[in-house]
Image (cartoon, rainbow, N blue to C red; front, side, top):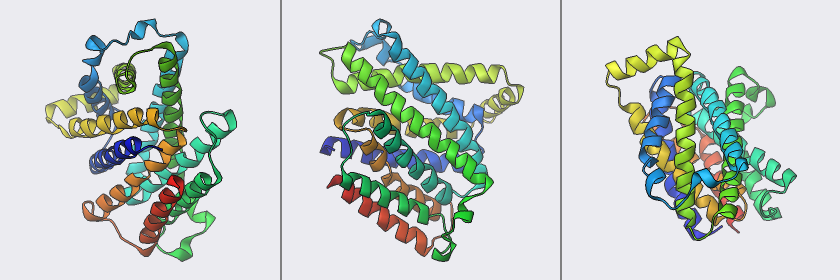
Length: 300
């Protein structure tokens, strides 16, 4: 884990928590998420015209991995909409951010993706996950399995699976890009990939809207009301994940990216409590301390 990766991820989590605050305050639907993705795609469209990356010359495996990443993103979108309608942000956000940590570590370990994690790294991840589990509880006595088994958990799990999927597929797609190209800086390749991915995701979402009358009406409503909140959210979201993509080039295992993105939990919980006026409890404070401890363990 390099200092460059740490700084990039620190900026990323701040942007990520900010767009989630906007999404939670708004009634997010497919049309809303499409505007977010469209804003993102427009921000990076210029990269298709001036960078030395010839995306058309890349192998089919690259496009297959990118398509899988986009499908995982759609899964993430479906789960996120339902989770924020049924749960507080300071409850849903920690759960959605902690589960991918274990999912990603498990998958990269099983399939041998990247450098093997050390025992200290794994212990640190376990501590981070334990802290994330504490944060949604009202009190320590509520730490029971049954309190995590409810309909809302299904949506949180869907979000986590989507996050895990696009993180791994994006990492592998960039690896294919690096092996196919030479003499091009890693940040340029990462942002060019993000631009191509954004075009594919937006195109797919627009196709869904064209085939779905309800979402067509939702999109028209956003335009009539001149609702710019999804545009603001898209700006925060795009720079958040662009920084994540760049940071992937400065770590030895993509699981480190998932760990340090947990810093956003502190920003997200603080935003939920201070801005959305959600409850603050001893379990959230303890959970935050565990998260910080786990991050330090992972660095060491």
